[in-house]
Length: 211
Length: 218
Image (cartoon, rainbow over all chains, first blue to last red; front, side, top):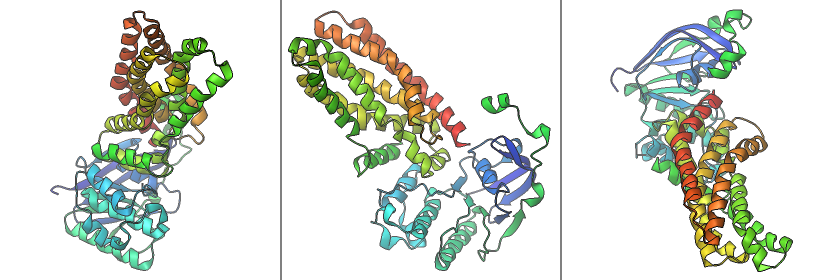
């Protein structure tokens, strides 16, 4: 995990063709946890999706090592008819890793390993979704509200996993509203809010169709 | 990619996976047509290649929207897009999984259902061969259509409208090759055209479909 660093320069991100954040600039170094703050609808999810490569930035540059991102979204990407262990083993194989036991242990899922994912509670599903991050073997975690529907004990498990991850040279960018008890830097997206009325920021219909 | 194929096949076989849906539809068509047309073996044998091909095509269409929609809804598609597998590979594997769970059973069952349509042995053979060559194109073209409509709620109707015109060349050459083969004529040209459509679809459409998915994920 050498030279793990995410650098963002003068980035503008858009949702539905309308700029939501602009002029963003920050650095995420190995061993660092950066917490994204901002009210609902301020563009945190859009920013994370852009950084994960799921949508192109409107302007600016994102510099990061290839194949470094593990993205954790609102949806966990679980298949209800597969068991907990099968779900995790699938993502492990996709990412070319094979060890799922540590991830099961870290999120206290061993007792549930042979349960079908559709019979899990919301919090258990979330824990399984977070355990997926561990089996990706990727150094930079981009997490979108990772603690939704987790109880206090599970939040503590999650915080421990993040601590272990950054201690091992990884990094994490987390959009969250609660205090995780982590030694984290705060990045507030509020000041970077784009003016949606600005004409230069609204691409024409032609650009949108062929972008 | 093998992991993805194994997962898709496993999902298809588990409860509610949709495996056998196309096959059941195909069976229903083959059983109902003789009742509707009448029991004259000669008439049935003459229309059998066309009916079996239309039946296979519609059976294939039935399960198309599952290819990407379920993965889109539960977030797997986002995660696959950030995974080390290129999106083109994901699309190709998912089309292959669709073919194995839908096209291949149809190919295997077609001679059996051909018996319901009073086909002779030569008929079994040519239905089997033309479906074997043609159904991969149906799955691949269908995967492209599914990729275009993946973000849409109730996109099934639009998907059918998009995909059916693209299926027509496959249908024409497939049914033509089968009809000529059964009649004892030379069917090299339609067979080669059918194989060409399949080869072109498999070679080109993964790129088009993955571009469509990337746009739909934004």
